[in-house]
Length: 261
Image (cartoon, rainbow, N blue to C red; front, top):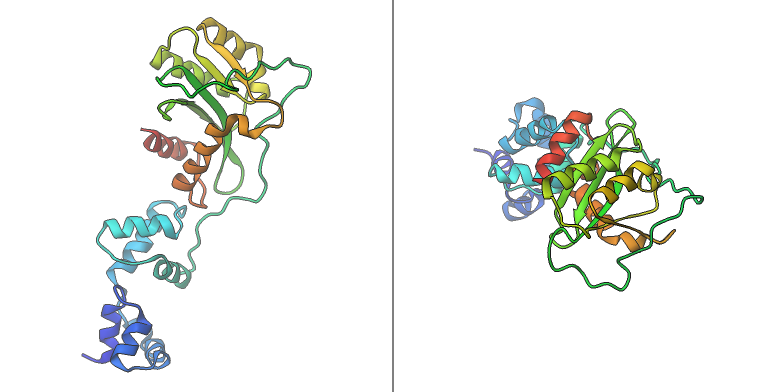
């Protein structure tokens, strides 16, 4: 076996430049040999695994998530090698558009509920305080999906969620209704959100009152009043999207249900 072929077999575990240094081979000479070989050099198993994982996840996974998947299959490779394989095959993860849609549309004429969480200690039991918010999720080919969630502030678990390809008034109401049916909290539950029009809607307020809950809202223009929900979005998007996008509504629902379960 030639030295160059030995490097090909070992490069999945050791950097090429390190191998060349140990074997006293010029990296430029090795790469020149690889170019001469053309398609004769066999594709390594980890490279095949990277391409298969990329296709299996609808071209949404970036190098971070691809690395986790191929390493779980027993291939000890890093992100830079994965990035090189993707580039060699002209593959690139789907990227969301730079435009960020507004998810909060407040009406100054509507009286907001007070912020009942100000100065209060964190709850020590579940189903005492739920915080809600809406975020956008990029969709392949353009457009957005809108996800509304209710998060238990004590357990930090999602108690209810709803996903739509539009942002109607009942988006947050349906997510809350599901949470109320499943969790059945006692009267006095604090339901906290921003001052978006979905939360100030008459039907939403009626749903909150019907179950003996108390509505609470962030102060206008103060994102820190709903920091727990904002923190959840940051983690959720990093873990579920990693810079990519969802193929469609059905695929997004499946991914979200797996993430929340």
